[in-house]
Length: 456
Image 1 (tube, one colour):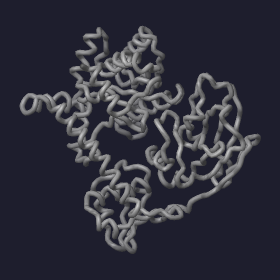
Image 2 (cartoon, rainbow, N blue to C red):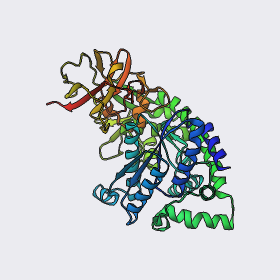
Image 3 (tube, rainbow, N blue to C red):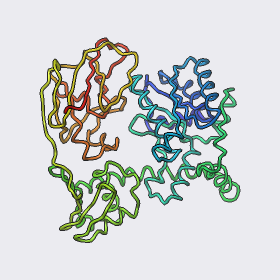
Image 4 (cartoon, rainbow, N blue to C red):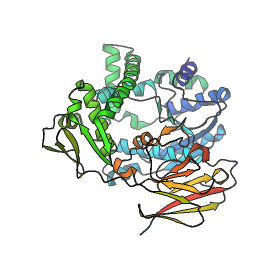
């Protein structure tokens, strides 16, 4: 029953393809243990190449034991294992961040970098239908709109997949018990100082006992409806944003007069699209911020963030000071000597190297490419309208603009990301993964390393 439900989720959302490489986020807890057990069965049908990834948050005295348990399971099932460790509490304190959010950020950063090391693997997490319901309640109490209430998506950017989202935790428990798998109990899940634990331990059981026994599955259905409707509304809003959010010469403006002709709910979505373009993300942007912009009076200003002052003039809202003029450049480079990009104060070097044992690097300053697939001279230029490529591990080609938006790269920073092309194909964009076609693999013998450093 559980296995069939997971297969249906995979088929419905196209989570896997034959011969995919997958790294499973494995904490050693019930859900991730069930995920590993299920993937070992799926491996036979999908011919999957499986890896485990364990991130030690060092939040509990038992964290070391959890790591040893994970290593034991990896050995027993001959699964390659990657482990990273970080003092999450200290990191959160130093950076004045929420503990839970810090752990999530560092964990996904580790998984993403590891996925790149092993050739653009998909990342599988053990989120269940219960996680979906808990997230729904937390966001409802926070006052989230339709998008937020859509909670956890089955797939993110084609790389992070959640095959257990249609399965309740109690069914995972039965599956794990039937298979005879051990798992670790995380005592922090009983700590009611965390809002999610209070929802899990108190709110949902209360509703199940007094109102609706099947509330978890009911919410799962609601979330599914919200997600499908969100796709439709997002497409509609994107269409209208092309008329209301105007970009010319690096200057971006919002046409409030046009927005006044739209339904209020749609106008709000367009305002959020405008904010995302000028800020790079929607973090810490409230409903009140959107309303303030939508109702900004002629000649008045609004301080959206510490860095962004917006003003309305002649029906348009724009940044004060306005965004810088767009930087355009184009160079042909044979790679024999460093390329100096005076426009960006950057120096770029190309080196042919042996395949490194570790592919750890930062997309913001380095890329490893399959040298046999590269044809010099390379073209190094500023991004252009309509640029598309397939990032490492992605299911298909996407617009560069959309990739940068998904990566939360602010509009003001996008002009500082040179585009590298071999022939007419993009091989790398600074700050983003290399192109799938030019990635290095086990068969790669000649590696081309591109390195970007500041140039004064």
